[in-house]
Length: 603
Image (cartoon, rainbow, N blue to C red; front, side, top):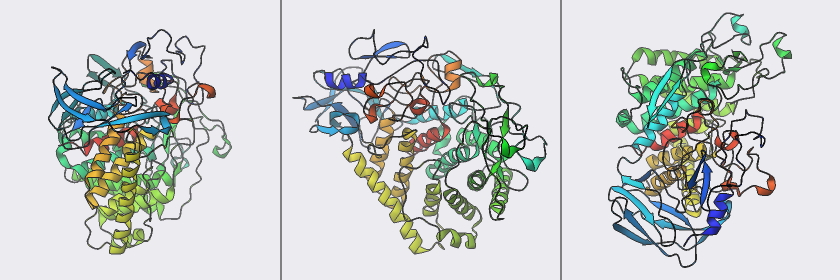
């Protein structure tokens, strides 16, 4: 039977299609494109999504599908007398599997009672729907060995669409996506006293998020996730292709990462330090120290139309320098088999950055004049990561001994660009260097396994299999995807099927096994986001939005424009609204985390 309570809860979610607002502003109810929280003209059980009344799904599952040999679970609103479920072939309706629903359980962060359908024991490849008496069938989904291949290719296409400085043109489905070459003047050097006004090339790389900034720390972090995927899962990723990428000497995967890596190398100065970012800035007409006015983000315009305010290199920062040292050393290792000259260039950059870090220089750092204080993070973590990568790249025994004294005793599972120590810890743990200190190895391995065990326990207790449990904040979808790295590294240390099943469940949530029943990746799965906070998706007027972009996800501290009185439960606080950057923005670090997570299941 239809569970009206559950559908009513979903209808509280504000899925708004509007002209986007710049960060720092809110959704404007007077805007002619604003759609109120009340779905209005849509029928019961429907929601206005992308300007269309769409039927919501009651059965919440991974709308892309499931892997042979791994966990397969769905979540449904609990209802009296609802005890069984069936799998039907999508083409014929034939019943191929039946099972018992779990007992009802409370899921407090979504304010509902749910039941779980577990069909992990069914492994026959094909296309199916999940059926429960009294409710509509689920969206169609696949079971197979290659279920995630297309989703991963589309995620990588998302990076391609974020490329800056070059013309982009590709087809996805029956839509052509295009933007002109942009930001060809990147960037003014007024804030770089080391250059004394000399020009510097900062073109290329990826736009960071829904805005057009290019940041060193987050760029390094994102490239590192892609390079680690290649290193951890092998050249099977060479089969992933999209657009016209990968036509040269490099596989598409490594070509994409190099496009951003090339830009990161341009952030370095001759003394080894690195500029913190390139972005809109109020150029200093008075001494830099007195400049306090911040530039505004550009409006919802295409990147080729973004000419004001001017863009500049920010001052150098130790944070950016450490992140560059780390990712350049990692890149030297990964690109060595493909391009020895490029690998040497990367290693030289890493050594130069490390030399600057060890010089005792303390540059005056401020982002005054720029849009916001972006991507600073923990210098301790960034330097640990850099030390590990330089040791892995050079085999320096003194550096190894030094970094072993810094190794943490705890490995968080909720980590992001602001705490990059995990990358160093994971690369230390997966090294085969026989000279590592056995006591430190045991300490690190125990901490990694403990974090994975907590993720498994949290997922088992949560109605939607979330390893982070009821934790929600800006960019939580990226955190969920990133936690998969904890699980994969733990599995490499101490193999455990529960680690891989929990990893799959994090992907399942992002692709539809969530309280919305919708994929969170543009262009992929059932009713994916239609109005992300992403300037090209708003400015080009095309629906659907640019594909392959993971949105941030539920965040109770949002700027949706909903009143406190009408605010839904924390786990329901996602708004498919281009104006809500706190839940529906996109970012390369979230995409990179999802790419890594999916990559681990490519065969």
